[in-house]
Length: 249
Image 1 (cartoon, rainbow, N blue to C red):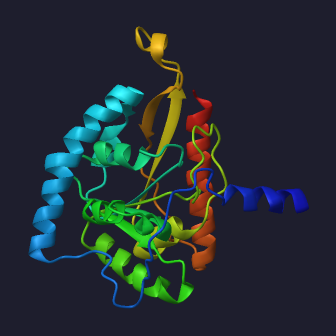
Image 2: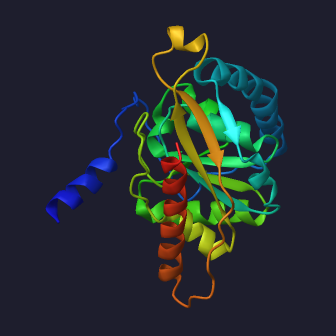
């Protein structure tokens, strides 16, 4: 039992620790999803006009990214939650490439907004900080509920921490599944898989290349009266689907 608890605590730790010299505090007035016209115009210009094409080329060069199952995204018209294993620094960019023009917001640790320059950039690229202070979580929840009501997508990393090139699905936190159940929206599971470089790439590539598999959307079972039971069942179902996909490598 003690070993199991220690393993869970270790999984919550980031292997890569970023430089976070700036102060960043969230209160009840923090604007998680700005909707003023100027911000929206600049955000869309930066996201689609600059970041999208640059990252598409960069990720192709570095990871030779292949995306499978894009048709599963098209099955979902309204709001949705997407989840994936967290194994690469640029894995959120790969999610963005998979969703294309579909509007998606990326949840991230509050510490990401303590990095100079980066915090301004990711704000315009639709990153949303998860408050560390539990008293501010209700404002975050309200903002994310509105995103789902507007028919957009929110991406979560249920493993919480980044473990580069990890080859297993780690323990999940409840947040993403709680949002899915309470908003009655589907979960779109996504799995990063690694493959050996082929052709000329194996000459100079040390790290593996990447395939992003997008699985069939999974609906919450709303027949249960107990929300906690629904959340737990959905979490288990999604985790198993992702584990099965990873075993297929």
